[in-house]
Amino acid sequence: MTFQFLSPKPSSYTNKVDADGDIDMLLKTERENFETKVVTPGETITHATQYMGGHGTYISPETNQRLSSVAGVVDRVNKLISIRPLHTRYTGEIGDLVIGRITEVSQKRWKVDINSRQDAVLLLSSINLPGGVQRRKTEADELQMRKFFSEGDLLVAEVRETFQDGSFSLHIRSLKYGKLRNGSFVIVPPALVQRCKTHFHTLPCGVNLTLGLNGYIWVSKHTTQTVEELAIYSNENEEIDQENREAIARVCNSISALSRHFMCINDKMIMLAYEASLNFPVKDLLKLDVMEVITSEVSEKMILLKAGMRR
Amino acid sequence: MPPALISPSENDYILRGVDSNIRADGRGRLDYRQIILETGLITQASGSARCRLGEGTDVLVGIKVELGAVELDGADEDVAAIKAKRGRVVCNVECSPIASQQFAGRGADDFNNELTQMLDRVLNGPQGGLNLEKLCIIPGQQCWIVYIDAIVLDYAGNILDTIFMATRAALYNTKIPKTIIQDRGDGEIEFDISDDEEEWERIEGWDKVPVAITLNKIGSRHIVDATPLEELTTEAKLLVTVNKDGKVCGLQKSGGGSINPSLLNDMVQTGRSLGQSLIQSLDEMLQREENDINLKRARKERIEKLGFFAAI
Image 1 (cartoon, rainbow over the protein chains, first blue to last red):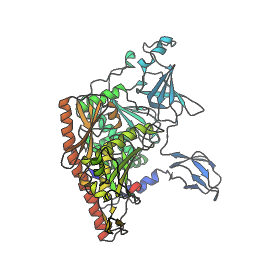
Image 2 (image 1 turned 90 degrees about the horizontal axis):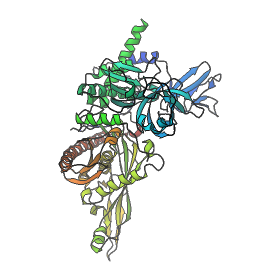
Image 3 (image 1 turned 60 degrees about the horizontal axis):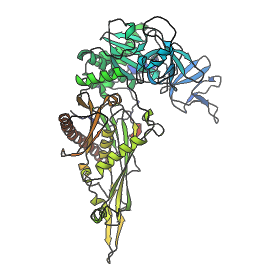
Image 4 (image 1 turned 90 degrees about the vertical axis):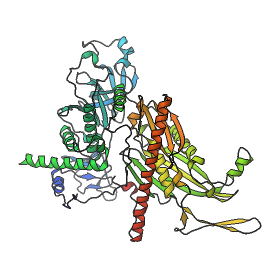
């Protein structure tokens, strides 16, 4: 029952100095390794005029230079320059794995919040009905839609279609997808989650991880039991013991630490952060100084890994 | 305000986590997040403070003291006579729509009223601690009116506790210019307000201002410093305001659920002891900050407030 009051700290652009007064030289190589350029609104991206401007750029009327209109990283494809904003809503692509929350049940469809500019739709026809057999959706199904998903439910789905107005339609026509249970929900900026071969991971610490590309992450207890068709839409949690709860909390806090320091989030990074976090009790991971220790350890390890790969 | 949503399985996970004393973020039931506090960051205000809880909740409080006429009407003559010798405190709390989607449009109106009323009820009475008589300059005529404006800039649960903390810090930071009263004889009194920036006084009774501890009843137990998801799981909320001496200055129960008498007693006691240690840590922090500033002033160094340029 102690209260910890802190003063705000200024941001510093100097190299990190450790307890012995040694300056961290790795940071310089780190900068060379990741050749990303971060720009702020109004900053000049390039003086050259041969480039085409994409999203997040504009031409200064006075100087004719190409400036950034958002804070983000410079993205160049041949001659097209665009800025990928750091803080943004999710813009989906077909086949993306997303996690969403049902906000509305209407006729033949659900509205799903997926951290996008508009709510996505999940049609009754794009879900698997219990029973397994492919069949036409009847009026009876339409009347009991809340039995499948009701307001507030979390689900993992795939983007089926994108529309002109920027909205999406989702589907969950696979046993991989469906309602989420037995765990806890974390939100990170969508820019941090990278597209990978798989977004379902089982970490060695007995925790299942679902990384939604929209920045919604589900951390849950690892279950060996196969999904039974009938239980897809169940809301019942399994028994989760003390140890599992701690592991889940630790993974969640590691993810928040990474996102706070704006480091990309994938299973490898989360595992590194998790290992680094083992020196601290779970609730200490919410402390800002502990977060910094963990993330700096992760970035050090990443650089070592990269250097090893190059050799 | 469109209600924020939570799924039944999340609800169950939080409920059982609270029961086994491991919350979703690994904290125990009575663990608070870290608090980041800075005072005096708004130069135009008489006093200000910004208080943040963990990575989320962010509250900015600005206090302005202005001259005004005393309130002359009351329910009866006695009340009017007391009011004529008093200054006033006017509170206003506003939730910015950037804090949460729920506050967009007119969504926050009711919530703003609730928060404003709570702050006002606690501070505008004998339990508020402030010496309102000292705010009166000429009885029956002029007094200082203390405008307390709080704005919620980011929301990650536990707003009221943060508002009260920030308010206490801002009141400590508030400087009221000194007034010089001159009696012109024949009943006419005039006063001057000192222009000297060094001549100021603190609001008397700032140290007796209570802080609030919100206790959220989840299942058959209670937690403090809830996250938004935990607040959605909460059946009933109890706000306990406590002052330095551990005296309960106000209680407010909200939420649809019920609290049984033995649990209620337990919650009030927890609130009291937590509130007292919160005030102690808060005062230490304020003292530390002031000492730093005094030290810098003595060394003729520049005193810089970080405000919104802070990295953390």
